[in-house]
Image 1: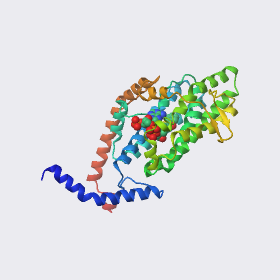
Image 2: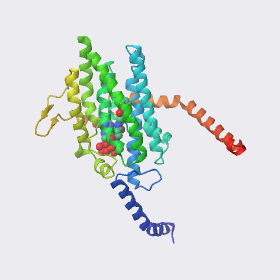
Image 3: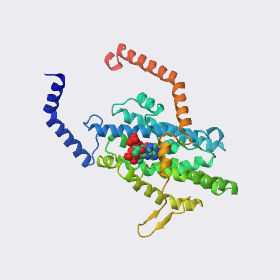
Image 4: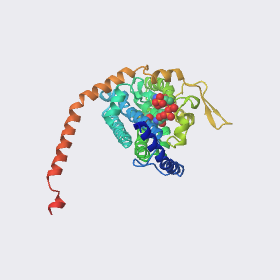
Length: 335
Ligand code: BYC
């Protein structure tokens, strides 16, 4: 029998087992339990998680750049310490997420390589420039606010390591959002030019923040399957609506205008109506043609190259520790 024939026969023989595995997977998902790394899972489920978690991890790491741009120019020591802590948190989020992705059988080095060669995506939002210090506050308020809307439901994702990483990340994100709002409250009580700077930042970040939730449901190829697998719990449009409803009263408190003439409360729907984001712009930014895409990837690539010696040193140190552990009797064994 040819090798192809042997493989086909083996696959047929394994079929009942595969059905049982598929059945168990579906039961776990439907009963709101978690799929864990050693459990059987469909190839598509694994691939979808790798795609989403990697994109999410890359977003956290690239997301350090726009705010990092202001670390050396923060207006006070207090603002600098807060911003430094926030940017460090984002590095931590990236690391939790790369670790969650690694439980699916991919390597962080491989994911980083895919990011810097343009084969994996990161959130469109980080391809816009941060022109003033008000942008730091608006990123906290709107970008972290949108991230919280999107990420709180991910704490109930069917894949255990991703869900658990999200619990911790969401706790930190809510601090991030509050620090942004507090910064903006301070600006709103400031001088006329500080209030203008605040409004200008809101005008530039509002629409890109709405685009963070992804394309409209009708153009979202992944949503239906991701919801069936309980990776996503809400559609892109549902979360965008939730974000708008949450943000409008906060904007009123701040005394800023959200730059959308169609934004108004709809009594019948019990939600705000709002205008259509420029989906062509989102498409361009995702394809790499946004205002800062090239700059962000160049920076990430050079940081990766400059960090090569650290990775080599850490690997050499780990190898030395492992070899010592093999040759030195453990304390328990010696006793
Ligand atoms: N930007 O079928 P769809 C943070 C892609 S970081 C770029 O709706 P899905 C923070 C999408 O990947 C927070 N690409 O996809 C950090 C897909 O690509 P493929 C980042 C986008 O996955 C530092 C295609 O378009 N958050 O908070 O069902 C400082 C079709 O879309 C975008 C996450 O990563 C976009 N905006 O839904 C401050 C959350 N939208 O199939 C803050 C986790 C869509 O060609 N991710 N695409 O590969 C998710 O929840 C989902 O992946 C999305 C998209 C809702 C984003």
